[in-house]
Structure formats: structure tokens, C-alpha cells
Length: 154
Image (tube, rainbow, N blue to C red; front, side):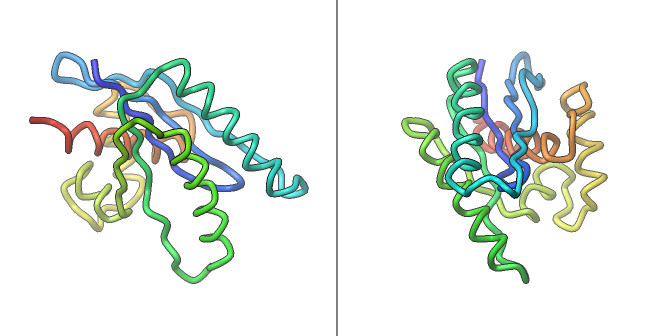
């Protein structure tokens, strides 16, 4: 059974989901959102994310990690924090295969349309998993994990 840890990196909220492929279908094994407070120091916030995701990796031993590419857009400081969280996740991914996806690529993998609205992606993720992710961040993470599992199919 292949397991992938999908991570939606963010400093205030990092979503994660462990998804397995079994019997031609998919199953959501674990999910959640790691939240940090703005009044905490940056090292403390990154440490909280690292500690939480370390427990997930230890519990589920995923063969791969899937991340969304950092998107600069109009808010460069926010992108820098997201990049730092991505660095923390990449440290946890040592020895595992790593997949990176642009937001449009996730939409294309999950919905067949790179311009699909987020709500459509979330509905399709819930349909594919037979379970509703606990938050938007966990749904985004599950979508990333699904992309990696779909891409890795023979």
C-alpha cells in the first residue's frame, strides 16, 4: 500500500493529509491543520510545524511527500514564510520521493481543468476519498497527495 503525505504549506496554517492507494481506490488515513500564532517567534512557529509533521511521518511512514509550489503572487513576504515552511517539510522528506505541483496542475490532475474553482477541487477530493477533509487546508493537502499517487501509477 503506497502512502503519500500531502502538505499545504503555510506559516499560520499548514494542512496535511496522508492518503493511501489500495485496491484501485484511495483512502484518507490521517489529516489535519497545524496552526501557529502570529505572536510566536518565527523559529517557534517553524518548530511547531516540524514537530507536528514529524509525528505524522513517524506514524505513517509515507513513501513520498507532495507539496504545492510556492507562488509569489503579490505578497512577497507571505511567499517567503511559505518557502520557509516548505524547507521544514523538505527536511522531513529526506529519503522519500518528493512531488511539487503548481496550483493549476493540481486542478488539472483532480478535475481535468486547470481553471477549476477550489470548491470543485474540494468536492472531487471528497468524492475520490469517500471522506470529507476536516478543513480547506487538509483538502488542499489531500489533493496534493492524490496528484502524486495518480502521477506515480504505472
